[in-house]
Each structure stands twice: as structure tokens, then as C-alpha cells.
Amino acid sequence: MSRPTIAGVARAAGVSVASVSRVLNGLPATEEMVERVQRAVDELGYVPDARARSLKVGRTFQLTLAVADVGNPVYVTMMRAVEEVVSAAGYRLVVTTTGPDVVDEVALVRGMARGYADGLLISPIRVDEDLVKSIRECEVPVVVAGNVPAKAGVDTVRANSPKGMLVAVDHLVAKGRRRIAFLNGPADTVPGAARAKGFAEALKAHELQPVAVAEATDFTFAAGRAAAPDLLAAGGLAGAFDAVICANDLLAVGVMHELAAAGLEVPADVAVVGMDDSELAEQSFPPLTSVNLGSAERGRRAAELLLARIEDNERTPRRIVVQPSLSIRRSTP
Image (cartoon, rainbow, N blue to C red; front, side, top):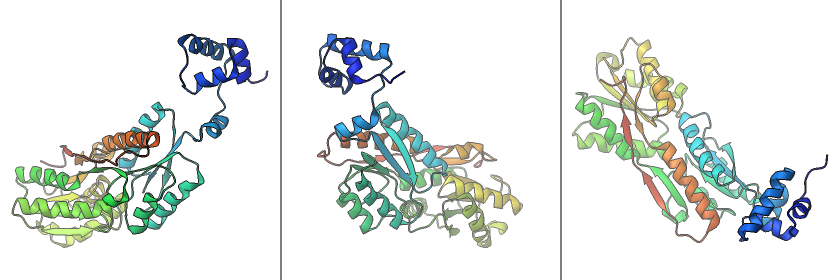
């Protein structure tokens, strides 16, 4: 049996091919015309040829989401929110990993000129002048889920990491924990720099000094376990710190493993706070208190901005900041 065609739909509806095309592409048409075409489409089981439609309207109806690590739970949460928004608008979402190297981020942005997607939503972990320049000159609309300089001239949606750090420190101090350590990820990254700054400011607000600060090589569980001995070497076993804040949940769970291996109990000996409030925070043992940086909200808002930018590329760029909250669980008293 041959596949139904647009010409067959036109014959069945008793209208012209042009009229069918208008209805299928959402262009103005009378209510009667829409009903006749839709009835014929349903009767024949007609499915529009996506490739032909893409060529005709100059769109692929495909969007790209680029993140540093698709295995990180925070990006999974963001991806789900983005997909929900764009699929409702008729777009397919393609997810890709840039890795930690800014060179690969730049290559991806420049590769958008190949025309395989109508827009790009990128969450860069490192930012330099080349990336800003490539974003500014990109062939398709770009929205950044993260922080880039205003001169990039691009819509951005970012977390308020410094405030998130303050929320975490406020909570620990209220629970009587004043000897607070910090495990960061790489400080030369966007989140690493923001969270280091926020930690210093939060301690200063409480007139405290950090008792131990360490930097992991990455934002992963393995990196958290590998960096934990640096914190313990600063005096953790002797009681130098009674709490530790980690730059994300993966690092925090890695630290909890090493604290347990060293014979320290969480939270009796050391309270632990993560950041991102990912699914991992609820799944860890004990369940992890974590700063919710609004990854789902950031994904949703960024997707909405990208769709709006595709429809009107002359819009004034928006810079949205999503505020944090704290999810309290058993890793803090």
C-alpha cells in the first residue's frame, strides 16, 4: 500500500494542494478549511514528510543541548526540563557532551554553522574570549545556561551560587557547626569560581575562617573521594572541622565515603552539605542535605528563551538569575 501524499489529502478534502499546505503549516485558513483538511489527514493516515518540511521552511525542528557531562545528575534534571518545553513546541532535542575543555565548547558552537539544528542551548563549564566570540558570531540562536559576560550579547539563565553558599553556611551555623571546610571542584571553571567566592563571602558574613579548603580535579564522585584525604590531612581526624560543604552532590557523596572509611560518622562527627540537590542527594546514605540551585527551572527558562529567540532574533538579550533553596536531609543535624 502506497504512503498517503499531500495531493491525496487535497483530493479527499476537495481543496487545493496549496490549501492543504497552509493548514499543515499553521498558516491562516478558514475554520471549514481546517476541518476538511484535518478530516482527510485522519482518514488517510497522512504523516508530513519532515525532511521536505525542513527544506521548505528553512528549519530542522531540532535543537541542541550541550553540557559538560551527560552523566552528571544535575544535567539530567536540566535535560528533562528542556526536553519537555521544546517537544511541546514541536522540536526534537539532541543532547551532546562538550567535556571540560573550552576548546571543545568553541568547536561545538562553531559547528552549528553546518545547519543540523535551529538553535543551541549550552551550559559551558569554562569560558574564555574565544567562546564568547564564537557565541556572538554563531549562525543560529544561542542561549547559555550559565554565566558569560554581557558583551556576548546572548540570553543567559544562571544559578546564584554565592547565595546558595550563604544558605548552606547559615544552616550549619544555626546547627552549631562553626568549623566549616570546603571541597571545591576545579577553581578555573565557572561553577568552581562562583562557589569559591560564595564560600569566602558566607564565612566572612559569620565572622568565620575556613579550617580546610581543598580542590578536586573534577566535579565527579571519584574526584571527591580522591580529594577527601586532603581535607582529612588538614586535621579532620583530630576534629579540626565539624562540617564540610562540597561544590556539588557527586563530590559530597565521595567525601562521605571517605569519612566513613576514616571512622567518622555523618553527621555526628562531620555534617556534610552538597550543591545541586540532584536525585543522588536523596539516594545517598545518609541522605544528603543539598543546596537546590534550580537546575530544572534553569532548563525550563533557558528553553523558553531559545524558542523565543528563534522566533525573533532581534529581541533584547535577557539575563535571568534563578535563586537557590536548601533541601535539609540527614547528613546535617
